[in-house]
Image (cartoon, rainbow, N blue to C red):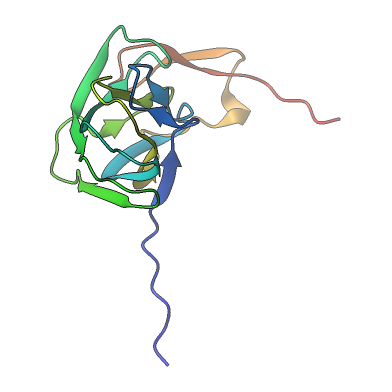
Length: 162
């Protein structure tokens, strides 16, 4: 019997279903480690019966806001997409798919469809960005600029166990 092989990829789903009849974005939770997206996935929960829906995938540098977001690309959910269908897009060679601590991903439908809804998410790898300072030599709070993200800071706090 062959050994089981694991991909070590992490699934990062949106926190709500995207409804294709509107333009309201759905988001993943904010990240606490750096993350490299390799695939985008979508599971249809309400059939797409009349008009295809184009969904824009954005990297949100300021989590939860559209200011400073970077469009990664789009995915088109076709007419005839039935409940339970899973759509997959390879993003391993796409730019701007490295996310950093405090960032998130949003999925925004174009609102052109008259029916349809789906869950969106990504697969990828978590990794550490930069060295972690030694707690024993730090004064609290310590503020460090986030590497490469350019928005926000990393602030180390003292923790006291109860």
